[in-house]
Length: 335
Image 1: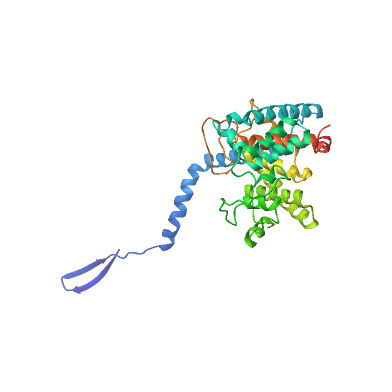
Image 2 (image 1 turned 90 degrees about the vertical axis):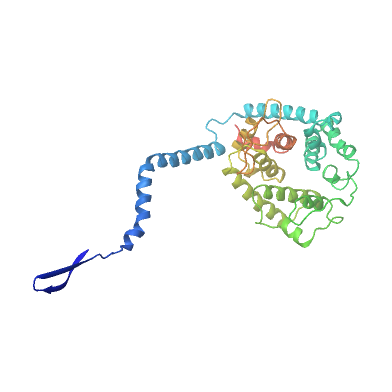
């Protein structure tokens, strides 16, 4: 505000007061920054503590997921593995009882899933276990309406029948499995074929399913240098994810089992196997989640859980392969 001299006549003096508003745009722009600084200054200590605590927790979990402070001896590990084999076998055989098929959800989930029954059949072949072999054969009687569209996953000598009732897209992984075991009878579309053999398209569960399809393809049709290179390339990515994802979920077991099935034993860390064995439940099975945290990083389920066929058969396949197919892995990692 300032005073301006208006008139100056004899005996009369007049002033006009003028108000000027000067806007400091720099101060306006700086206000949010000043407010943020004052706000964070008040919260800086608890916020910093929260960040540091989070980093420490994640760091400790990562270390615990990849290294053992006191690794078990070979004798101790073999004992744990044999216990896991016995307990998981008993659980799977109980769920495979055909009298439970119509009354137990996990029994149906086991007997109707050709991929899980492939794992059961492989365990039976590796160990010459007649009861597991009998369980694998049940797949064809339980699924009498359509046992042959995916039956070759369970028994490679079975005839193939076109899966007429399935409407799969090029992004589905089920056609990969069918094509892998019956490439002539069930050719893929160009897009689906490109997806199945893509080196870098898939992550997480998509990558493990792709690896399983490639394992089947090589197992049923023979190896080539390019296929071996692709399998190793995808396996390295899966192993890198396994080193970061410390949650012992269904996917955790799947990564280990599929890496072993693909013959990538040097990528499997002994600490992962130890944690998988420690997560086995007293009934011999495994859970889908880890303390309510599902395989998807943004999904949780806080309710009482039971062992599932999907997780348990993968865990069983893992320990059977270690014992019967890869004893050299045990010799290398345990003294």
